[in-house]
Amino acid sequence: MNMIRVMALALALPMAALAQAPPTADAPAPPPFGAHGPHGPMGKWWKDSDTVKKLNLTDTQMTQLDTLVAGKHERMMQLGQAAEAESTKLKGLLNTDALDEGLINAQLEKVLAARSNLEREFTSMLLGSRKILTLEQWRQLEALHPMGDHLKHFRHGGPDGAAPPPPGDGF
Image 1 (cartoon, rainbow, N blue to C red):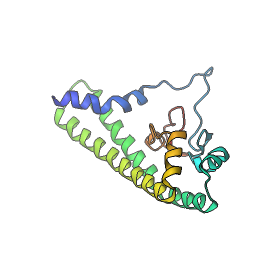
Image 2 (image 1 turned 90 degrees about the horizontal axis):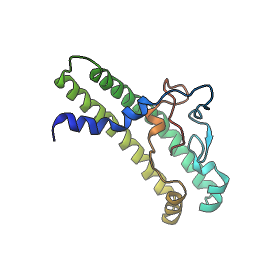
Image 3 (image 1 turned 45 degrees about the vertical axis):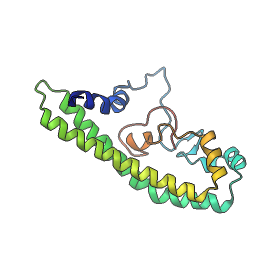
């Protein structure tokens, strides 16, 4: 597969996100990062009373989850913003008349490395969550709240981030 095809595949999702038009006056804006959604504030599903009941979470587990996420949140926001910045640089390189494949390929590597760092940190947080929950609770959680596009908030800024998150709610 040639490098241009690899690049096109690697850019498919972020380019689609970047291409979204801003909300119009008629369409409501997506909720800001941290707004209450189906997973509670800032994706804190363990703060949602229905989820707490369904999973039979203890106060200790909820406190441990708070501590875990508080410890990871800032780092994930930084990594997400770094990934978004690298993607923006790549988009700029692709939006020129004179394409420099060497620069584009080097920037693509930076994009992939930044995304990998974010994914690694998120997986570390998932592992921490799994250690707090029983296997049955973990399975119930996945059934209630599939992880799906779990990194979208971190790729699109946070409460003070420049770019709004896409519609919906993540982890």
